[in-house]
Image 1 (cartoon, rainbow over the protein chains, first blue to last red):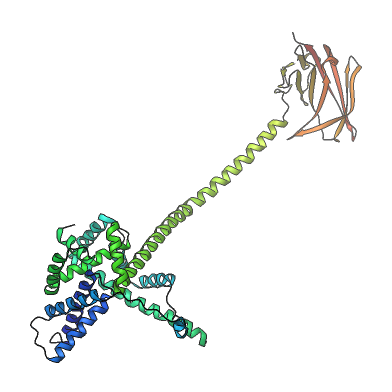
Image 2: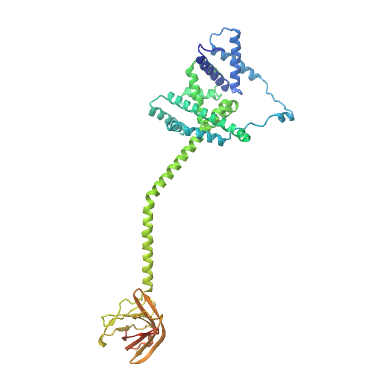
Length: 182
Length: 268
């Protein structure tokens, strides 16, 4: 599916359309809005592949989304009864990180960040109620940037945190395997 | 909270009436700024939920949305973990700051404290020594010296009277120490300074007009600093008014024989 002229633009538009669809299915209180958004995008891609002329991609996507939402709403509530032996052949859980590992990973990632970034996160997140909003206004005034820019900076820090956490968790997941080989 | 934010929030929580929500759907799919504001509002909901700031109904609606959406649940978990970690770091930093303060405080204070303790210990030891000295010191104040009469004063122990007879005081018969025993006294303690340490026990003979009135072969020696003295306890009835001579001798030192002379009078 091509949503823009350039690949980057296309990727960004895809993500933004997906985000809109997730919001739509979330407000409809439907289960797994991400999956439903992907379903809409699949159907949209098929229509485009079939050569359907579309004036507004987003409006068309909203139309499909409404249809998918109706389908979901009309689906009867399904209960599946599993045989007793169903779980016998399911492999054991892969090791998942405990909260402790998650916190230690986050601590580790925060330690790798610059003091300014950590201070910004602290100011941004460690306020209460009204003071939270005041604290954020004060950040924006102190840094002499717009609230939008503060938010972007926070998102950027958190994106780096997420990447760092993913690396940390990957290391944890590989640890038990290496210890059994070693 | 402005009306538009309230509307976005209700939309995200699935609480907006369908007609209004449908209008907002159109806006969301048409306008990028609406998408951005929706993202902002969702982020605020996540943060407020993580910090427990949502109202009861908002919280239950938001948790229901999270249970339907793994992505939303993941976002909430991320923010919760981040806030918890930041809070723990902040608390730890505060504790460290407090510890550093006390550390600095004690680093500065400890030499001062050490000196103060030394001074206090020294003063305490000195005070104890002084107390010990005062406790052992004969309660008679004046040493019989040039004054012809030894002023006696009642000791603090009822009817016992104490007198101190110093050595090295050369007197003629006219200037003998005069012990004035107050009326009602039942016992007299004579502390008699002696020369030479000798043995631990001395023999003492007290005579009036060459007639022995009291004697003991084992009067213990006491030492207080440079002074050595015998402690002679007498029944007050022994000392009738008159002139007395006290012969002192140490059994271990044949050259130690000494004499003290004094007169006794009774007060009114």
